[in-house]
Picture 1 (cartoon, helix red, strand yellow):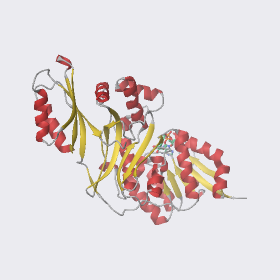
Picture 2: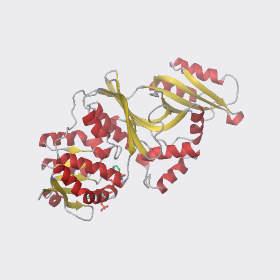
Picture 3: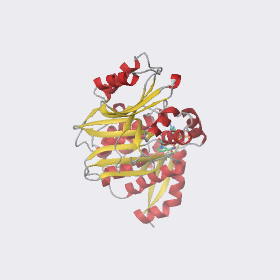
Picture 4: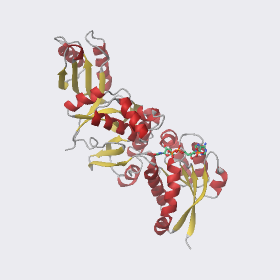
Length: 407
Ligand SMILES: NC(=O)c1ccc[n+]([C@@H]2O[C@H](COP(=O)([O-])OP(=O)(O)OC[C@H]3O[C@@H](n4cnc5c(N)ncnc54)[C@H](OP(=O)(O)O)[C@@H]3O)[C@@H](O)[C@H]2O)c1
């Protein structure tokens, strides 16, 4: 008889329940791969189970509660007791990752977290193992399915943000409280984890600047189409002059970019490095069974040989002011000289216009342009000056543009 391998399960919600079911279904297969028979040692929820008893009976602990407390304490206690831990918790790792990885190293156990970013898409494994020796220059990610669904629907149907959000909630792609998804914080936590692995540099959620999609209008989507652009909530982590910038914001992409055709609730991550050019991984970013599948993959890996815990070999300085190209949408009075004045202000900050669309008459006059890359601080200084011009009828709207197309 193969020896049993005992798994303590913390949390039995969307992912936890799906994991318990998948484990039961795949136990024989896992046994064939590992030579050990996996079985649940106990389940903890708010109303059942006792953490200490489950820990004592487990070889490995799966944390699927979410949030920082009591999960940080449970994960630390499991590691200190010499147990491997598998988690899907991006909030915990983006804020306490260094402490937890340090404890795992100290106690010689594995802390695995594939499901914490992009659900079942194996981005963590690829960064930690397949690309362990690559010199990564940049990552781009669509790492929040809720916002990608909303933006895809706005682009497809021309509907307003509120309508697309309500639709996402009805279909189960958005939580009843979607705040952390739509304001970019959920994606920022995931980008902190990816940046940490790709650049061997500790990155805390607080070091990631983020901006959400709440102010995107149907109008922006329509103008962007005319300029050949599609809108996504993009996470970026990139090496700039030996330093590191990590950020999340809505960005326009030209159609040749690998992330331009990632639609609906899907996630995708693009890794760029001189040695590999560019690779893109995509797939379902959430959902109980999908996420549970990534968790079970981590459990199987932990049952076999040891994995790498994140190292700090480079420790790049993390910066926030970087160069970007911008889309700029101005509602203006319909009179001569408007474009010239806007161009002059942009020019004084070193910004040059790549393309421009002038549309509408009278109350509907609009000036929409794409500006070549410049330091964001200089662009926003120009936008403040433009906002104070008397012919502006509303606040300027600015959205970053990612120019690479890889075709
Ligand atoms: N849902 C997804 O598609 C998805 C995708 C990727 C990653 N994740 C991550 O997976 C984790 C779990 O998410 P989920 O969607 O499965 O959450 P969920 O449905 O809200 O389930 C949470 C579970 O944790 C239990 N719990 C909450 N507080 C607890 C406490 N103080 N002590 C003990 N148990 C407690 C709950 O107990 P009760 O049953 O008693 O309420 C419930 O069983 C999170 O870190 C999340 O970010 C989720």
